[in-house]
Amino acid sequence: MAGRSKRLNEHTWVERSLLQALSDDLALPLLHVKTSLELIEEGRLSKSLRTQFQNLSLSAEAGLQLLEAYRLALDHIHARQLALEPVVVGAVLQDVAHGLTPFAKQYATELEVDIRPGLRPVLANQPNLVAAMQCLAISLIRTQAAQAEAAKSSRLVFGAHRANAQTVTAGLFGNLKGLSENAIRSARALAGRAKQPLPAVPLGSAGGVLVADLLCSAMWQPLRTGSHNNLSGLVTDFMVSKQMLLI
Image (cartoon, rainbow, N blue to C red):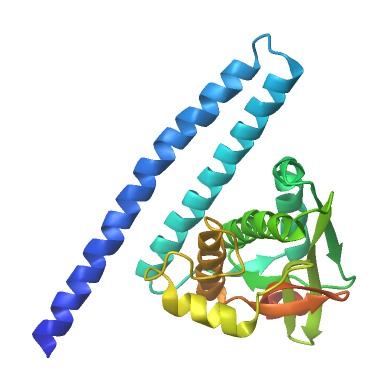
């Protein structure tokens, strides 16, 4: 049994190493595409062509963010413990929303931020939190746009509120369908085994939700369903920083 367990561990390590190498290889051509498009945009182009090149550049950038988050998640799988520090959740959500606003416009989606007053800093890993919220947003922007169908526009809200005296909940909310607790649990079990682990999410977008789930799990809690101002969405929880409570 010990020998079999050792072989399985070695096989898993090889798989992860291969995935890490593949993500690095995929990032290089995406970066080349993005850089080339930016150079082309500087030339004389018609308005329609410039818009098309800008949209392609934004899509390449979104792909790079997803790959970077995936590499980060793979690193955390190997790490024994993730370094946590006091983080202002509201500031992170504001920055992520601002950075993804041009991408959201491609999908006729408006990004908003609603942070309840009086939230204290939480224990988190800031690069991890940024990457998780970026992945989640990129996937849910595509998802809600696909579900909206004939709707001319939609909105998604980055929200954070106090769950209780010691916990803060943060995530992304909108008019999303099919993202239940059972669907998330099933997706975790099907990850790597099914082409479409989240049926409610458009093909090619479920990976972002699962990577965000891994990143959130590495900090404290995995993704779960939640609500904010009568909107449904996916959230994670954070412990309030006791260090900051003493100040």
